[in-house]
Amino acid sequence: MSQKSFVWLCLLPLAVVTTAFFLLPMARLVVAGAEGPHGLAGYLAILTESRYRATLINTVLLAAATTVVTLIVATIAGMFLQRHRFPGRAVLIAMLTFPLAFPGVVVGFMIILLAGRQGLIGDLSNRIFGEKFVFAYSIYGLFLGYLYFSIPRVILTIMAAVQKLDVGLEEAARSLGASPWAVQRDVVLPALAPAFVASGAIAFATAMGAFGTAFTLATNIDVLPMLIYTEFTLAANFATSAALSVGLGLITWLILALARTFSGSAVAAAG
Amino acid sequence: MSTAGHGAAVRIESCGKTFADGTRALDPATLDIARGETLVLLGPSGCGKTTMLRIIAGLELPDTGGKVLFDGKDMTLVPIERRNVGMVFQSYALFPNMTVADNIAYGLKIRGVARGERAARVAELVTLTNITGLENRRIDQLSGGQRQRVALARAVAIRPGILLLDEPLTALDAALRDRLRGELNRLLRALGITTIYVTHDQAEAMELGDRIVVMRKGAIAQIGTPREVYFAPKDRFVAEFIGAANIIEAPIENGAMILPGGRLPIDSGATTANATVMIRPETIRVADAGAGQLSGTVDSVSFIGDRQRIVVSGASGKPLNVDAPNTIRAKVGDRVGLSITADAVRLLPSEP
Image 1 (cartoon, rainbow over the protein chains, first blue to last red):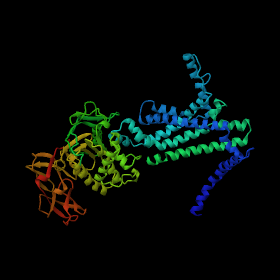
Image 2: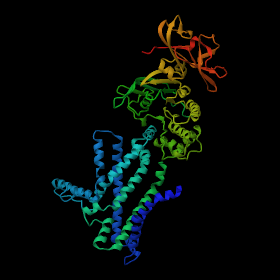
Image 3: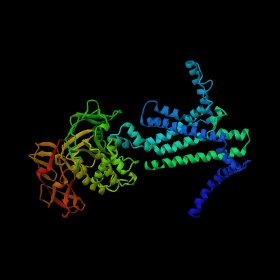
Image 4: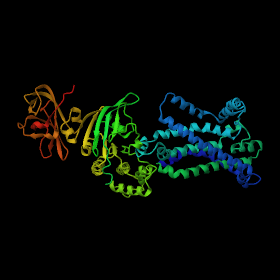
C-alpha cells in the first residue's frame, strides 16, 4: 500500500462520521428552513420579522456583553492568580474553575438561588430596603448565569497565556520609564491578544447558543435558542425553527470571523 | 556623540539579597563604580552577578541595610522606571507588537518627546548600531545579531545615566559573538556611559571591562583590572576561572619549590611545607632535555593552529599544561626540559 492510500484509509472514519453526523443533518436543516409556506424567504424572516429581529439583536448584545465582562474579570483574576503565590491559591483556582463541569440547568438553578424570588439578594434587599430585588428570571439573570459559565473557561486560557509571558518584556518597558499602566497597555495586553481572541470566541459562541440556563430561568426570555425551542416544540413550526437555527450558526460564525480579522493584525504583530 | 558625559557614578553599600524562601543570593557587598567606567561582573552561574545587576537596576530590593547610590543620591527605594537606567536583557525582551523603530523610540515616547525629535534620535541610533534599513521590520523578522543591536539602541536611546547589560551576547553563536564584542567595545567607549556588564565569559570580561569583579557563591572574590585578575589572581578560584592555570602544591625551601622534576626558583615565599602556586600555560617554555629548571615527559600534544597545548608529566605532582609555539616539534614520550621564570610563578594563599 502506498503512503498516500494509507493516509486516505486513515481519513475514512473521519469522513464517514463527518458525513453522517454533520454534513447530512446540516444539509437537511438548511433544506427544512426553505420548506415553509414562504420558501427561501423564510430565511429572510429572521431579519424582516420584527419579533425575530429584536430577539436576534438581544442575543448578540447579551453575548457581546458577556464576552467583554468575562474577559475583563477573567484577565484581572487570571493575571493575579498566575503571578502571585499565597496560601489558599490552589483552593481558589479549584473553586473558580469548579463550574466547568456544571450543565446550564445547574447554573440556572444557582442564579435562582441567588437572585430568585426566595434568593439571597432578594432576602437581603428586603431586610435593608424593604423591597425584594428579583432579577433571576430576566435577561439580567441570564447574563449573570453566562458570566458564571464563561469565566472559568476564559480564566484558564488567560492563566496559560500569562505564564508564557516573558517577564523581561515588562522589566524592559519599566526600565525605559513606563508606568505600571503603560506597561499593561503597551506590553502585557498586546501580548495577551491571541488569548483574548481565542477565549473570547468561546465565551461569545457559548452565550449565543446556550439553552439550558435560559430554559431553567424562564421560558419567555428573548434569546434565539429559546425562540427556536418555542417555534419547534410549541408552535411545531419546523421550517422557521430550522431557518432560525441556520441563522444563529451563520451569524455567530460571521461575528467571530469579523472579530478575528479585526484583531488579526494585532495578533500577528504580537507574534 | 551627544550621549557622552551622561554617566552617573554608582555606589552600592552593603547590598545583600536573601530571597523569600531563605536562599542567600548575594552576601552584603560594597562596590564603587566611577562615572563612565565599564565594570564587568564575572562569575559562574549562581554566583550572584545577575542579582547584583538587578539591585542596581531597581528590579530587586536589597536586604535591609543595603543602599544604592547614583552620584551620591540614595536610589534604594526609587523604582526602576524613575532611575533612568538603560537595560539590555539576555533574551533582548524586544516588544513583538512594535517595529524596530517603535522599539527604539519607546522610552522617548513614554517621556513625551515630540515625534520629530524621536525620529531624529532613532535615525541617529540605527546608524550608530549599524541597523540602518531595518526600521520598519517586525522583531520576528530579525536575526539574533540584529535583535541584539536593536536592544542596545533601545536602551541607550533614553540617554541613560547607567547602562546595564545582562549577558547580552550569550544567545549568539561564537563567531557573531566575537564580532559583536568588538563592536560593543567601540560603542561603549564612544558613548562614555557608566556601564555594568554581566557575563560568565572571561574573554568578554577581559576585552570590555575597565575593571572586573570576579564573583563566587554570592560573594566578591576579587576586583581588579583585567591584567590584575589575570596575572595576580587573589586565590585559586580566580586563577582557575580566568584563563587556563596550572595549580601546583609543593613545599618551598630556600626560595625554590621542590618538585619531582627539579627545583623551581620563585620570587617570594618563606620556607613552608605546603605552598600553592599558579603558573599560566603560556609562561612555560619547552626546552631540550636537561635544559630549564624542570624536566618531564610529553604526555600529549594537541595542535590548535596558532599554538599547541603540550601536557608534560613528571615535572610536578600532576601533569603541567604548556602552551607552546606551533613550530616546536614534540611527540608523546619525549623527554623535555621546562623553563619557567621566577616572576611567572604566582604564590596563592593555601585553601583551608
